[in-house]
Length: 297
Length: 188
Figure 1: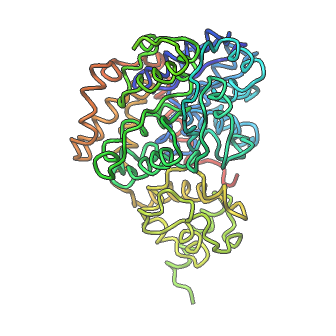
Figure 2: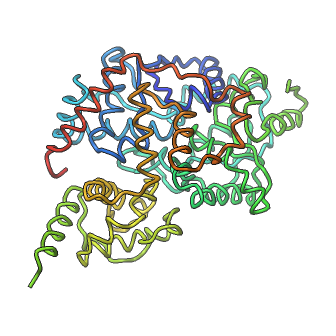
Figure 3: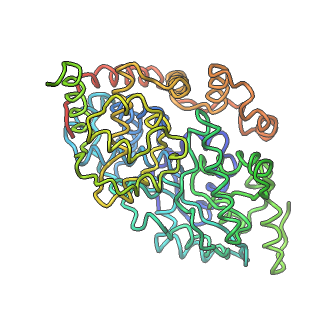
């Protein structure tokens, strides 16, 4: 399978382990990602906060390039915010002629919105991908209890994402189970992490992160798994107050790609697990060790 | 008799509702939006209150609220609304209107402007520059600073991004978006 790939800005910086793990996993299961030529920032969140048309034009430019360069390929991204903005532009162009006219005039290029925009969860849960994952998982992370955190924008708004279940989604739970892990039932799968407001309203958004972590741990999770670099960063980097102010215990946070990569035999160094803010390798190593597999930390 | 000011407010409110594609009387004040809102604890006007203000014609309270700047756009409210009232749409339109009317939350404005400056320069978002400039301009120099050494030593930040080559095109696009949006066709 081949897709046009929109990495998003975080993949080039703070989401280093996510990027390396994604490249590793996609290579192993035979999904080819073709980076969109000269893509630009999707604008989340400030683009659409400032100006509606700008919020549509920024993602539409990259989508139009993708459709021009690779007209046969659907588009995929690994970031929930990018996914929402790209899909929003696609949805608008498809359903509202006036918007599409304005978008095309602004990006100075036709944009037919002919191809779909997917997130990693969509493409990893296709039957072909699931079979390939099963074939490539060697030992697996048997018994590792994880809380699958979807965040907001992988599932909402319904009319844009088309997600079948916005309160209790299952795609990531299915994927981590293929990696041998044990997804726990918990209440905060799609609660907001505060997104960009962790910058401009830090004091009132930090508790959003803490209550997500607390609920994950209350339901027995040893780690949280995400499908978005921004969710991952917020849940991981903002744990300081959680441990100091609320007495919570630090909990590692991984992307779904990292979990798969480790289950497929990637070493800790291969996917830069040491780059995590909260030490991440140990919990994975002990899960692998549970059934006698080694793991180079 | 309505005063001129009231009349003007009403017209603006009607236009806001039309642009947001929201009918205010679809809301029967059940409060599920506020119950699910992750930011309600910090809002001076809760999502249900925003809807109530549209019903009683108080545009001023909406555009002056911190609500429109604290909403994260998570869409939990509309997801759970029994009448599909699109509050996030309404809030987004209210933000544009508030900006036009000169009511802007300082920190939001700084973040948005730094963000846009980033896109103008690189076509992409440089996370370290974004956070660094925001911290300086918002006079919060220490925010997130304890995490910086870790991010530098692990090369999570500090490397310039592979920037978009056609930044000139991006800048033209931003200028056009700003120009056209003042004459965008009303309604959805």
